[in-house]
Length: 283
Image 1: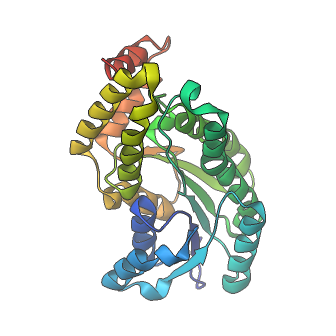
Image 2: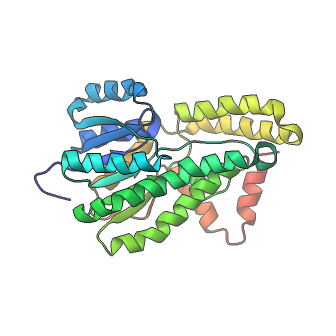
């Protein structure tokens, strides 16, 4: 990943939050950053931040819906044609969903899997031939919810669990052809993503039926937890560190809180400690 040709990174979901912060930080670190988003009409905040950082010439905005396989293939091919290489992919695009399957049905589960899991797999698959050529890397933003299943996040956590399993399985295979794989696991982050989910849940409470009381308890607890949330820039910092690292670890948590939260699961062999913890959120 050295040489005179500028390194190129593709980052998805860059209109707000972690993706926006990661795109600007990657450009500041000298990467030519292809920042993708479904609606490029929302690129104003990203480009304003890039100009403020003095890196607007290193940030290129492209449209991309990761659930559209043809668009993914075309976007990757276009980047390689324009820049001659692709050195890294940061899978950041995602969509939250709060609710429970009895009330919300299978369509919500499938929609969550499409953007949070299949979109990640599709982009990774399309990028791998070019990452093999450059000795590149795949960095995927999951969540502590990809390790610890959380109440009223069944669809979202299922998708993030799937991403974790996919990448953990892919990592040793990709390494044999010179491609490194890493997972970034944020905890609570202050962003429009979070605000939109809480707004949605407020509406959901009116149709929660037998789950109303426990959903309200969950919402109350979640709102309080954001008092110690990271900023998007803080959560994005490990992504840029991984881009520049000689050797990436498989997993990186973005805060001490996230490390402690994930560790509770990884040492809980029968699941009782995690169940006691998450059940207490519904009291």
